[in-house]
Amino acid sequence: MEPYEHILVATDLSDDSDAAVMRALDLAQRYGSRLTLLHVVDYTVDELPIDWLETGEDNSDEFLRNWAEQALTELAAELDRERTQTAVIMNVKSPVREILEYSNNHGVDLVVLAAHGRQGLSAWVKSASTSVFQKSRCDVMAIRI
Image (cartoon, rainbow, N blue to C red; front, top):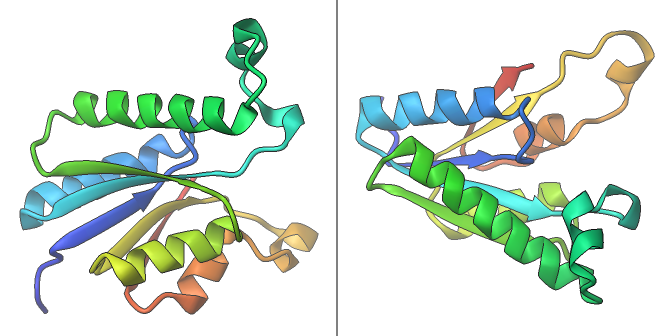
């Protein structure tokens, strides 16, 4: 088996997704891989960070992009790794499609993401991690949170 050359970790920037980021970092260090932190901006008005209200900005999309870029840049700096890059995508389709398109178009050979361990009725609802797993052209690692 060839070592992974480009690992993509899709993060929603929550504390829960930190486990996926740390696992992806560990793998990238082991394989000497390039690591990309990806966040797809996919918020409704109800989910806007409280910081937006304090700015008085009218353009929530611009605020969200800047906020996500800053958060990813800070996260990449915390990882203190030369071969880490960041990408923020404004959701124009769906987060799943954006993750798949990014991985297909950027030579990603492993996608790492956090997955909720669901049981019962909620297990019937397709999660983003399940959809990425089913449709991805490359390996997918789901970290249970």
